Image (cartoon, rainbow, N blue to C red; front, side, top):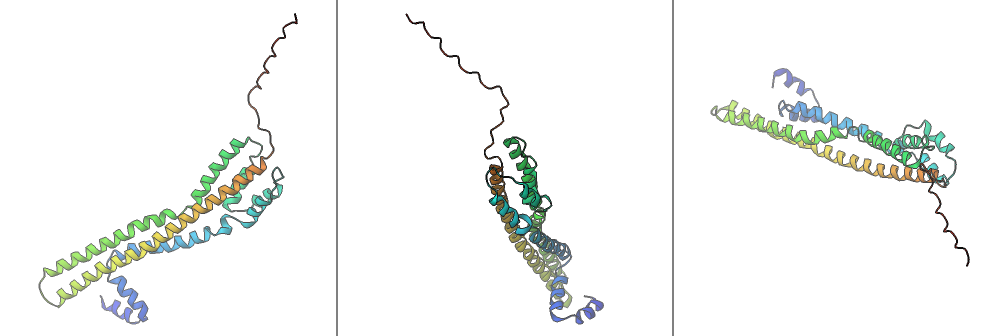
Length: 241
């Protein structure tokens, strides 16, 4: 450690000194791990905000769908969801726009829209999945790098410098491993939690939209595209003898 770094470290609070010493002794692979940690924290914060229930399943939209009577008018629901940015509102609005079409066409369109909304809800989870995989590997590379330094110092002979090099190599190996695992574990927990939450919300959205379509198409006579079958000819009466 240089004199400038030593003086800078001496002016820091004790906690900051411990963190800086841990990070500095971890070697060069601590920097990509630091980037991974920043990306992980940012993604967790953004997904926490985006997956709040009121941002995905607004209570007012759920209540209006449940209040709607079978075969009743959905004008009030359309006014509510038209300018609402939630995932449920966008799917409901798309369904209400297709109510004049046959039911099977509306269902297909809603399924396509729902798949797109699920992709939007899962946005960012791939970052957590990647960090979960690469953070331990980066820590392992840092550990191997530290062990290389240790074995290199062992071949230089005895002395104070040799002992210091061995200590630095061990610190680099252990600190990089600890930092990598400390990033991977919360990233894995967050990925599993958000994935499960998206899955549960998708099921709730599907249930509400199926209920809406059933109520909107209640009592409608299915449109017939073919020619109605001809009536069977009545058997000719045999003249009485």
